[in-house]
Length: 471
Image 1 (cartoon, one colour):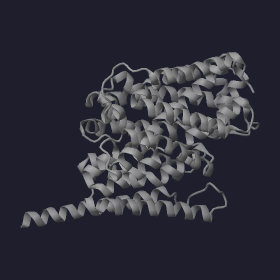
Image 2 (tube, one colour; image 1 turned 90 degrees about the horizontal axis):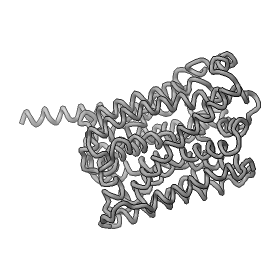
Image 3 (tube, helix red, strand yellow; image 1 turned 180 degrees about the vertical axis):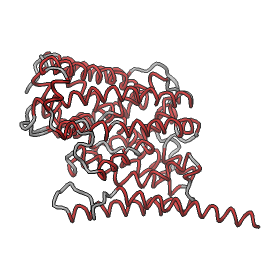
């Protein structure tokens, strides 16, 4: 075990603050679906930015893993495309989502296309917000702290702790804890980067020590691989967390402005994580067995007691901010969007609470099947985003709207093509985690299938309009 009492102090205080922020209630107003799921749609700009920024960065160990292996291309794959699509989201979608009556993506799809499309959308959302990558990262962190192999047990305990406080406090608890967690995430990485600079020298010195692949903006990857990650950044358009926060904003203006401000904060944090990851490579190149632990291992070596515990607390806070949000969204999707109409309940609050715990169990099962953060992101993104993209856009933008009877067949076809292509890639490649079949990544045929349905749908609309005008 690497911690002493000084290190346990900030970590213990963090969990106590989470409990305090969850239990604290300012008012005794009656709990409704809108208040429980969206804080009454009264989210102010500072709270909006805090919860969106912290939630978007849950994959912090995956970022460290990638930076250690491929250098500055981290920014090209995990930074720039997401800035672009976040800005487009702010311009095109955020105000429309805030003005829409629907509280969730499946509800918006149900309103636009019908019940079957709403259920299909709920399945897609449930997969997108599966908490498995974040439970996995918590497990790795706890293994690093404890030094034993019971990491999965620790991860399960923390996952159910998160499920407890979000199911109790609802979206308000998520927002209040995110305000704490955004402070910790920036403070932790500033501390570690400063320690690395002081110990190893300036970034200029480190840059000269890096191999060519780490200084190459592509990271040595082929163009097709890079473009897949650019397309995976389309995740932004179907991301339930973005939708939830845009819907919860106090006004359409707040939703739009909040995303613009968040992009600036993301760019700053990307600089911190990128710089820290390059220092980690300079320190451990050729000797680090698990790149996913690049940040923790560097902290173990460079930070004194107390600050070490604070940095681990910051890492846990970054992951927890996304874990609690995803658990809540998955619980809402399962409870309110699926079980509530199926069982005929008048409110989805109680079922959402149950769904949160079911989602935690589903995440634990999935992480056992795919024990890599990057692979989890890649597989889920490659298969689910093509399924969801056009139907979700069409729920808010008429340009992308499919005929209602086409939506479920379109989603089924996209899923079948993308998952089938992925399966064939696994069967025909010696590398277990290589998914390209015939040299093509599975995302592309899935997306092309969706585009074909969209183009055919537009032609169908024009034909019907022409026939109606002729009559």
